[in-house]
Image (cartoon, rainbow, N blue to C red):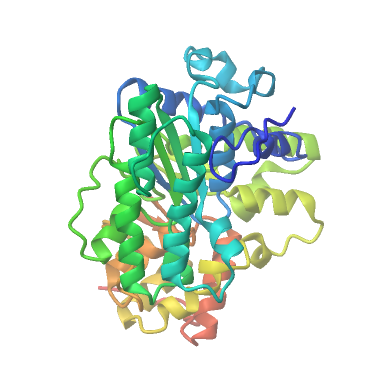
Amino acid sequence: MFGYNFFKFLNPGSWGFTKLKNSEFFVDKTGMLEKLNESIAKYCKYRCVSRPRGFGKTSDAQMIAAYYDRTAYSRNLFEGLDISKLESYGKYLNKYYVLYISVSDYYRSCGKNVSTKDIVSGLFKDITDELKSAFRDVFIFYDGSPSYVLDAIYRKHEVEFVIIIDDFDTLFFERKDDEEDLRAYLGALANLIKNDEYIALVYMTGILSLKNYFLSMDMDMDMDMFPETNMARCDLMADHMGFRYDKVELLCQKKGVSLSDLEKLCGGYTVDGNKLFCPYSVIQALSQKDNDPFSMLPEHGANEDLSHALEFSSEAVFDTINDILDGETVLGKLSYFKQGNRSFIYFESTFVFMVYFGYLTYDEGQLFVPNDAARARIENALKTLNRRRIGPPEKKD
């Protein structure tokens, strides 16, 4: 039984996680559910996890939905996995209504000819209509926002929701010039998630953090309830940001592949001292014979934009990137990356961008190239811009 229903957003069931678990390269990351259960228990109910493309954001979101969805009946699916051995497992399993919003899926369903304004208004109207359809016994005075309907449902039935918003920042990459509509989108998003009463947990995924977008749009809205969780700094989720080494070692043993060779190709990421692999790259490497490093990262989105992002950078930025590629020690302190700096001409923002997007990794104040896959992309961008240093670096006084 897949636990699937015909609603687009409400209670998506376990079909996504079922498909993932049955795949050849399944890695058990259910231990992260214990961290989320702790968040619910301690009323630290807001999580926005920022990771590069290919780091399993959607897979994790589908797993979370399958675990909490009260219609999924997914006990058999999770039995024997890491979460089933932990204390909170049964307490929260299939206990909540789940509102699952994939912004990237909704954007693709609209098509490129639909205006950003219509996409934003359509998304929140569709959520509202679906909630009203599912809870017909709740009297709604007017066609309000999703938060208005959710609040009415809570007051009638006293039920809490787990709200999962996957790829929340899709519109910022696909429609980045439509600033007024993006501001409206952020406002509607904040309105949805800031009501404490009907929310058991909010779990959001994106490439950059929610705070970054509010800062870049100069929107004065307090998002401090979201702890910083990204590739540069993390709180309780650091060891689940990618594939852990012990999990990848099991895959390597199964496929007869050298762990050290795979680490050189697509491992090497460090988040708060935890060594991780890029999930997309691991699956690519284990499923094909010709492991060209350049093909190990997704061929879309940010990975195509590195040369554009660096195009107007200063000499200091290019010198530092060349130093990193040549093995020099580069120390620094990373601050928020502002999406508003569209050409990334500021020294610090450039390296935050490269860490957030998986080209560099950051550990104890030092920047590194994590692996051959990331190195190939950086080398290609510098060669495209004719900025790759030839020969040894100049000695510094």
